[in-house]
Amino acid sequence: IKRIGVFTSGGDAPGMNACIRAVVRTALYEKLSVTGIYQGYQGMLDGNFTEMTSRSVSNIIQLGGTILKTARCLEFKTKEGRAKAYENVKAAGIDALVAIGGDGTFTGADFFSKEYDIPVICIPGTIDNDLYGSDFTLGYDTATNTVIEAIDKIRDTAASHERLFFIEVMGRDSGCIALNAGIAGGAEAILLPEKETAIDELIAHLSAADGRGKKSSSIVIVAEGDQNGGAYNVAKKVKEKFDYYDTKVSILGHLQRGGSPSSFDRVLASRLGFAAVKELLKGNNRMTVGVRGNEVVTTPLEEAINNKEYKLSSDMLELVQVLAI
Ligand code: F6P
Figure (tube, rainbow, N blue to C red):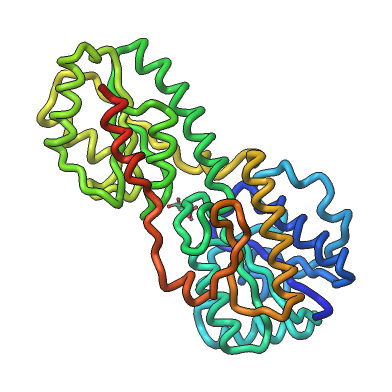
């Protein structure tokens, strides 16, 4: 290998810049050249490339977002699109790739590396923490911290007005952000995609809490992928049957994707960026790098794509009930 291409794709996540920095500097340290590919697969199709030096990744470890930009690219899903991308990649002298992103990014890398002789290593980067092969994905820790800051602030106003708040958090089909931030933010109840919560059950829970003198305010966290259809629906259904509280809905939205990465995410990003380049140098291909119990591990790309990992600990699910008394 002489030249690595690095890119970020799919939803941005805090820690992506720290990861780009680690990939670039590890590669340069190992006497490889690095091309930055802008806008993920879209940049491959457009030949939107830039030469990366040690200085081009100065002062970015603390930045949210991604300096290489990102995109969700439909054309890359076609064989013709990938053929065009390959021509551009080859013409730029790129002979290996490091892809940073979520499941869509992994799937694109899987197709591309099956069709063309370009080794690829994938790094899990998404706030959702929904990928197989790593206990944590880049950005998840920061997003969770952002959510608890928001919950704390909403709690101030909820308590002052004696209101019940339904706070919707991101995570797609994963309840990781909801569960962790909900516990850390002292939520009364947490609605998760992985676990059905009947509205009647939620109402019974809220009215029991009320009976125990907790009527001043309450926070209910609703994961966006929750089976009841999101915070507005949950609030509406609760309101129809339980008219005690003044209820409000707050959708946290994309603010959860931004911000300076936490120390956890910066270290994780640095370790995984370093590991990805090392894997390429060992001659490996079609792998993901991740962490398991604080050790860096690799997983075959296909295995990572084809498996779903249940990341909600049973003790945490129980905690939600117990600590809400
Ligand atoms: O995958 C990250 C994520 O933020 C999800 O939590 C959310 O469902 C989705 O991306 C939003 O996507 P977009 O930024 O394209 O609206």
